[in-house]
Image (tube, rainbow, N blue to C red):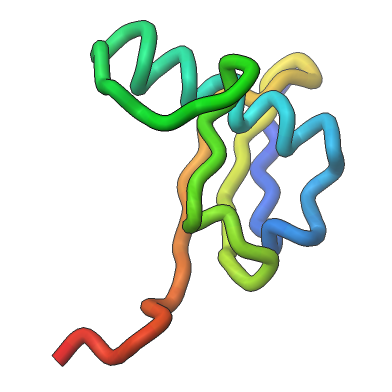
Length: 78
């Protein structure tokens, strides 16, 4: 089975994809790297998980195994 790559806005991701993505991020950033993040129910959900943010989600064997987010800044950078 080959990995499947999805490129979608956050609002277009399935609830299953969102849950697995937030769980994966929690596992990586909190459990593995030991970061102290404001999390709830062992899910990493933050201000960048906006409906207009674009995500690349990779599923392997029907499970999210990688994700990236791309979002435009809310205010100008310069």
